[in-house]
Length: 301
Image (cartoon, helix red, strand yellow):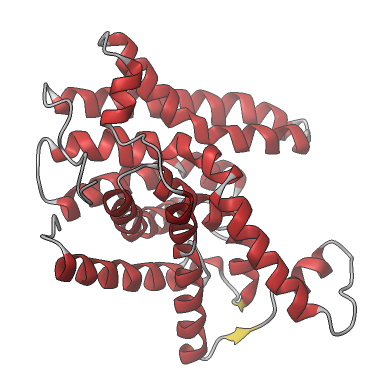
């Protein structure tokens, strides 16, 4: 399969209407879901049920895509396949799952260069739950956590995050490609739309940026999502399937707390993976992948 199979190859009829329809449906459902249903549970302090609904929030973009395909009376199977929902070899899922580890490693290096304090993230994590790590077992437990995150993120969490990828790197990226062949510009569009989708979580629940449940937090998320979309798009193009970026997204979500607690910062805006360190490391990886792609293939970038 060609690395660029699928990009801009489907649904050339009225792509702008499809983009507007998709974003309208996604944001409408998300507003009701976040601001009404989840807010009600959150205010009642039903945190466990709130966490369950927060997990299934990832399916909303997929729901929007299915609704559009149904309204247009196009085959759902062919439609999803045209947007990139195809099979993917397991080794490609694992390779994609290693991508967040590169982001983690680059961010760790930047933290050391900039003089931030870095620690074994399990120590503050265990402390937060009033638990202690057996003496001498910190490194072993960290390695075990990283390996389990790679496997679980590339398999189980991959299936969950596929709901997002069908929307962002599926319909939205493909339809944008039918308007412009500049994939960098298209990923700016996808990154902005993707980042704004998180705004209710940031503003209402202080998610990702506890010190900034405001416009600053939303802006930081939008900026962080742009280079991440470039990386995820590369994985889709390279391996010919949305399962590849879904695996990377699953692992990234699994690594989230470890990345947050690795670098000691006073403000989450500077942290990984959604703060400035994360943005810098993701941007670095995006540039490297872009150069590798240009060297190996005719670059769509």
